[in-house]
Image 1 (cartoon, rainbow, N blue to C red):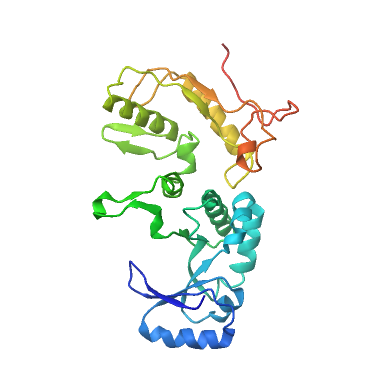
Image 2 (cartoon, rainbow, N blue to C red; image 1 turned 90 degrees about the vertical axis):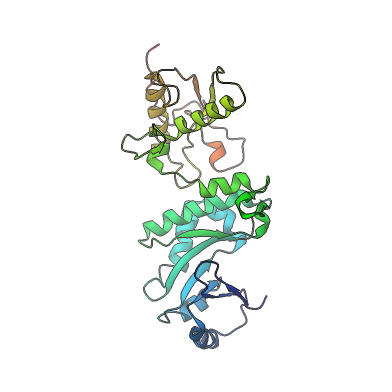
Length: 300
């Protein structure tokens, strides 16, 4: 595919989008420099040689991950760190990186589920390398189910869950019940953890269909101990123990204060027959019945 000129929807800067690998690096740099007379240019680039050629040019660079690398980056934090060390760290002092794109137009599609994990692992790797460059992804208009009128814009049934995951990344402390989480306000109610917010959103939905007297049971909640950046034993242990303490306190949720919330931790054992990555690693115990981490359950 040759170069494709696009207009940036926010800044109206000139954007050069290219996948070509046939243009020599020095010719490429000369060509790009001439384009600078038309405005700030951003280059969505897959070729490290061309990234190097842009060093010191002042050109803003959007660096894209090859789609075929996305699954590995989603499942392996060390692969993300390696990608950053090869593609970003050697050039960050001279190249003006504005964004890392974790995938190109794979949502919607059968591999869309890898995008969020790749974004999270890349973000962690960039921060660890002292390169806090924003991480995003490229999506086509097909992510929308409704686009007109603009106020009715919604994601399609196929893409809604994936896009919600990408857009709805929440602070880790808020998800882990950590006491210093800033939380959010909803009218007169204040939420300091994600579980209460989710449960109360279900209560609100039930009220709207005449189910205000129905009780909610949390049949599964947990945190994986391996499989991506935030799926580590320390976070899983923190979540489980803070969950137990929160539920055992009987304080309920902001919408239902003082109402006990029947809750079940997922899962008793790691499930080694499931596909690799996080789905295998929600257990309190390994399949050989050794402990993954300790949970301080209250005495009955």
